[in-house]
Structures are given as structure tokens and as C-alpha cells.
Image (cartoon, rainbow, N blue to C red; front, side, top):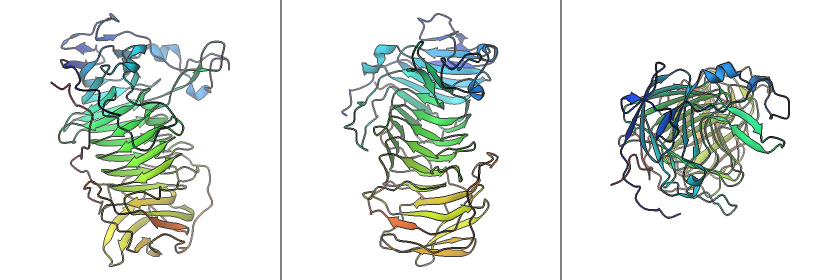
Length: 459
């Protein structure tokens, strides 16, 4: 989709969070819904005490009115650039430019996190309800989308530390029907296509801790840069329009520790998953049938460094532009095992010790070559892949899956293995430069930035 042109010049507005009261441009926040920013709107949550006609939630999804009312909702109602800083222990940032915003190319919000710490225990901590939708929601979608004009832009200020702890809203029905009125699964959630980017150096950090899913968009999601860490009970990242949504990572450093509950993929796109650059570590539940990289329409490994663990692998698209290794092991591997990947000259590309169990692995890096054989060693046991794929060796061990206990620690620079049914494939493209990890923890690149959304309104 072609760009709609320059974003109108809009003055930056400062939002300072505090449990003692929210301020906007150094003045107490307004309670007038006509203001660009106001406080006092009721929070959307799954309310306790209803029967099954209310929605699909269970007792664990419910919250009391007392808990919900303790939250302060900071609502943004007008296009612009908003800089959020400070801490709030029971609050939500909600962006709602009105129902007509979806079709208005000027309905764009740049939400800059600059030392923000937001906790919401009943719903997403950050939610974009209504902004411009830059892409069509139709079945003609492909894996190549352009979200540069998206109305939802989450931006991490250089060198800032930002923390989001968020919950979710189980499906609530429209009254008298079973049609969806509300359902927001992610701690950071957008109903429209969304971009996540760092500023000029890409050194801003965002840590997301999620009661359910971490970072969600109902249509497309593009990550361009920044240092992002997600710890989630379910999927780490999710885009949920079946056979249409595209999750794209162009750069940055993304570390995901997902599926700490009963299930959960690292990255789950109900359409396409496209990895063009940056460094991605995606760890899924190792016993629930979930993947580090999960997609319904195809996963494309085109560049960057990717390391993913889970309990199974979805197929990698054959026309991916970068070589990759794809392993499915005989059984669930123990945590704290060490995996080493080396080329046929003995040069090690990866050494990683998993803090969690796993049964599958995907690895791709710019220095890989589909004409070279690679050796995978796990706790000293080797298995070798030949170009073009085929079964690998059979290291001893492996256990049958069991119910996960959800108590595993976040990835600390470690990971897995044994088994057979390994594959190797992919072509040689010209991916963005990204250094592969060489030690026990993922590196933090300076923050590649390929076609990021505007960090500020353009002149």
C-alpha cells in the first residue's frame, strides 16, 4: 500500500504517570472526554458474578468491580505524539480516536515510552481501540505488507527502560447474542495494525510481563527496532486474523519466554510470519504442542539471527531467503542441556544452554550457507544435517510429554536436545546485518531500523 503522505505536524504532549495523580504537560489530567488526554473512563474487564450468557470466561478470568475501579484509565482521543513516563501501579493507557478513525489516514498516534512503568491487573496495560487501519482485511493478503502508515505506533525512547505488566479480557458477548463485544488477549494490544520501533539508536527497552499473551495485534504487527523482552503465560506475540495477519520483524532484539502456563507459542501468527532482520530468541512451551515460531500461512526466514525452541515446528517456507536448521527431536529434552551448532570446518555459530525443556529447534543466521553441512551437538552428542534436509542422527534419551508445571525460569541464555527428523533448507538472500549470538545469552544489537514508523510527526 502506498504511503498516504506526511503526517500533519502535531505538538508532542507529555503524560506523566503517578499513583498520586496523572499529569498532562505538567498540569493535572483533565476528566473531560473532549480533551486530547483525559482520565476517568471505566476500564473494560471481565466482571465476576455473571452467568454463561455474559461471555466465555471462567472463574480465573474474572475480576471484581472493586479491583477494576482501582485502576486509572488514561485515554488519548486525538491524533498526535504522546510521551509517557513515570509509574502507575493500577492503570491503563487507552487510545481511542473514535469509530471513524479506522478510515482516516490522519488518525495516527505515536506513543513514546520514555521511562514508563505501567501495571494493569484486569485488562491490557496499553490498548489501541480506534486509530487508522493502513491495510485491507481481505483474503488477497500476502506475506508482504507495508504498515508504515499504521495509526498505532509504539516507540521506545533511546536508552529508556520501560516496563509493562498486563492482563487480558476474555470474550464478552454482545447482549442477547454470542457475538464478540470485547476480547483482548495481550498485555499490549491493538485492534488495528501496529508498529513497534526504537528511536534513532534503537537502544530503548521494553519489558512485557503478561498474564496471558504478550504483544498482540488483530491485523498486522511490525517490529522495526528496539530491545524487547516478553514473558507470557500464553503466546509471546500474536496476530490473529486467520490467513491474513502478518507479523514482521525487520530489526531489533526480541527475546520471548512464552507458554509458562499450560500452553503458548513464542510467536504465533494466524497468517504469515516474516523475519527479515534483527535478533530473535523465541522460547515456547516444550510440552504442549506449541512452537517457537508458529504461523498458519507460512514462516519466512529472510535475514537476521533466529533461535527458537518449542515442542514442535511449523514448516519454514521453501522460498525463505536465508539458510536455516529445523530440528524435531525424539522427545522432550531436559532443561539446562547445552546445544552447539558448528559448520563443517568446526567454527561454532551458536552455543546456548536452555533454562527450559524443549522438543524442537529452529536456527537461522546470515553466515549460514545452504551448501554447507552443519553439526549440532547437544551435551556432547552430535547429529549432522546435510544440505537440502533429511533425517538427522539419534542422540540417546528423550522423555514423553507431560503436563507443564509453568514454573520454568525465563531464558537465561541456554537450550536443548536429541532426536531425529531434522531439516535444513533456505536460500541465500541479502539479509540485513545481524551478529549471531556466540555466548550463553542473546546479544543486544544497536537496533537495526528498516522502514520504521515516524517517531514524531513529520514537518
